[in-house]
Length: 484
Image 1 (spheres, rainbow, N blue to C red):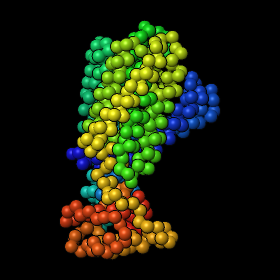
Image 2: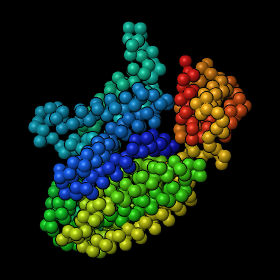
Image 3: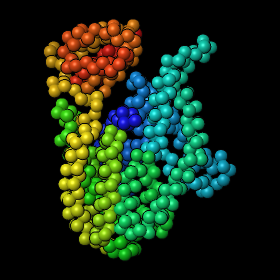
């Protein structure tokens, strides 16, 4: 199960890698026009819409990325199937479709279906599509239907499978969503302890998108709390109104960036640069804009236990801020932009204490994350199993044209594997070729090692990995051209 989650986490790296830039664009746009959100400034509108076009479509990106990453071969038909699966379920369970199926007005449809376009649905769609690709991408249909054989069959089977998934969710989704709303209303009467529980479950539900059910109770006017609206309008009690927002600032501005630093420091030596590019951008996005998904999704599946620790620390932060009645609020998210803007509002109560609390949490996050990662060998970015390469693992010596070198290397490795007759499937991760062969006895390891690769890892009688280094993608691309 853990291996499966880690594979899922790696599959999310591609879509996650584009999120920090989008978050920063939105943050800068919001900084330029904090009240109008683009309505009062064309540049701000351009930046906000550009960033939002990506952030708002995280579920779609996940559907495509998971399908591509979890398929046995990285293939465009798998990615297309992920998108097809997502479109099927979100269209069938959209407000208008459900209203038609139930024979009622759109306004009477359960609110759960208004939140069907979430990350959880995107991941489910990607997993179903990958499974369909792995099962049907090589199926040959009778001659009369030959056009739909193989990879063309995958989107069709994905569509059929998502009909079944949609039918199940039609009954299950409202129950789950409604249960969370009822749970949120129950803990709202617990004061500071309730704020802490809310913070914990808010983070814990991020992977599913169901945190919106909790947010609707505490942040908006579902149960009469309306914490965001009341805080910004000044209609509330100082030190109380804003208690479901304030505790997020120490986490998003300080805690998570410190966690990113810890993950960078514990990354494998040969992967530090790659880890830094993601973690630095994601950490800055969290601090500046309060958008945490790029950072959280980078480790929540790779190291789920660590993500639970993060959720617990978030709950503790909200509990502390609510207990001492330190308040600040946000309109976008709990980053620097909103902190500066909200600290001037009438209901802001000693907001500077949230900065001190944030520094305290930065230390806790860094020390705790670093200890847990090293103590239990958690697979955070830069420490994944597939990246446990030898100390001298890296790129082969660069002699002559890079293009010629990759072609020569790919050709020799492919021949060493037994060529077309023996290579059944070809894939790669960040530093390794991951191959499936028909007969391991036909693999000439000496010939492969002669190319200068740092190592070979035989998994079982059909699966073998060749450690290439950070240029593995170029070698894999050249090998793919050799396949007939």
